[in-house]
Amino acid sequence: MEEKKKKKIDIFFEKLKNYICENGDTRTREIYDLFPEMKRKTVSWTLYKLVQMGLLYREEYGYYTINESSKNISMGYDYLNFKSRDIYEEAQNYGFHFYISGIDGLSGELLHMPEDFPTIVVTEKDGIQQFLNVFSQKGLLVIEEKNNRIIKNNYLNRNIDIILLRGKNFSLSTDNIADKEKSFVDLYYAVTRLEYPLSVQELVRIYENLVRNKHITNFRFKKAAKDRGIQMEMEWIIGLDKYTEKTKSFMKHMIMGQNDGLY
Image (cartoon, rainbow, N blue to C red; front, side, top):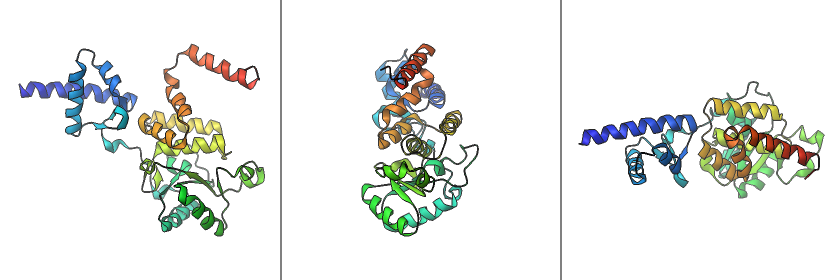
């Protein structure tokens, strides 16, 4: 009898594992739909057993992934830009939560790594002013989000060394370098809000590489978006491949209409 139960769990896990590998972190209700022949109570019990066995990992809000080690961490300190390494080492001296994000956390996802680019540093609220003072005294041009005057000045914009962003969720990083989902979200934010010197086309290519290489886990991608306050945009991006062609066509016409001042 025990052997029969074990075999059922193995079959259940194999099917669920294949689904998660193909679709990323999966909600409980999706798992119910994946096993329509089973009672929901039985599915819940099986999920519980798989978590206890260490085969599944349950994220908050009812998401499941294969295990906790599936975190998409960056390639690490050795792959940081030289300037970013100096910033990383200096930032460690002040006791504030921080991590390096953006392009530095996406090594391997870009076809051509730029030689020089603004370093994105995410820190807690109390660390913003400290880092502004410290790095400015070292002769670096440092901005935070509210420095619109500098961001919009074409000459100064090209010479920015550090962009400081405020963050709250520091579990989105490993060894003070943002995980890949957060690195992309922060880079997207910098490109679309802060005139970061990277083309939208390159941003799209980076995202496509992340998806193709399965380096984005939807649950952590959404957590990263929540930390940056752009959940709706990221939800839209994640859902693009699930929309019908007519839905996409409708969205395209709506966007074009807004650009033409029709709405």
